[in-house]
Length: 60
Image 1 (tube, rainbow, N blue to C red):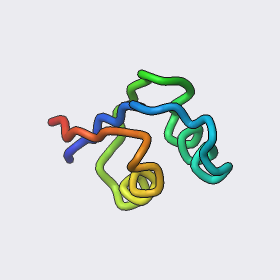
Image 2: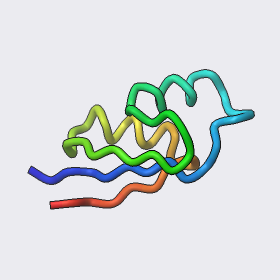
Image 3: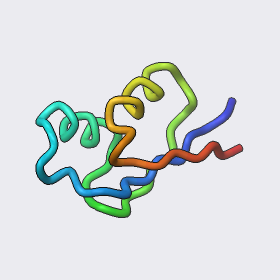
Image 4: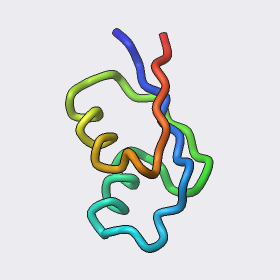
């Protein structure tokens, strides 16, 4: 199964509380943090919510 490498590239300061909560749920705490998650619809939806704060790369 494919995996997603999610990197927080922008600060959450000034963003909505929902976006902050989504970043925390993904496991991103500060700028530059990187997490690797399975490519599942749940994570795709979370990434879509904060797409302006993160970059996503597919990893095998």
